[in-house]
Length: 146
Image 1 (cartoon, rainbow, N blue to C red):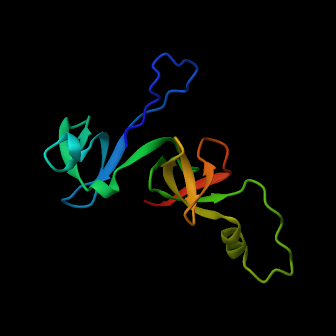
Image 2: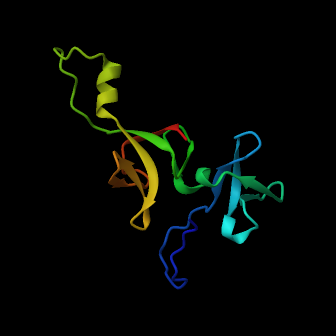
């Protein structure tokens, strides 16, 4: 799950904060820090918290990496987050359309899951890769679940 370029002489890359999150076994709350996979420890996966200087055991299936951007509300976006993407421009709702404005906007929006595929973070909808995720390219992105 740890990602790196593999070429330390590469220049011109935009550096981003590398951090992970995972859910604690004890109370299902999120813990943030450095990921220590199960194969590096006895049997559990851990998140090493920099603030507390502790190894916290986490549920393996909940671990996700920060993608380096925030949503429209300033919420950090991680792998496995469920996001809503509303296009910045959309056709006006016709007066004869029986849907409410909320229903219309919901139908225009796209619900996707953030995953790491094809050497990049991307949006996956209905099991299909749809878009690469990066700042400013997807209209209005909002984390709706994680």
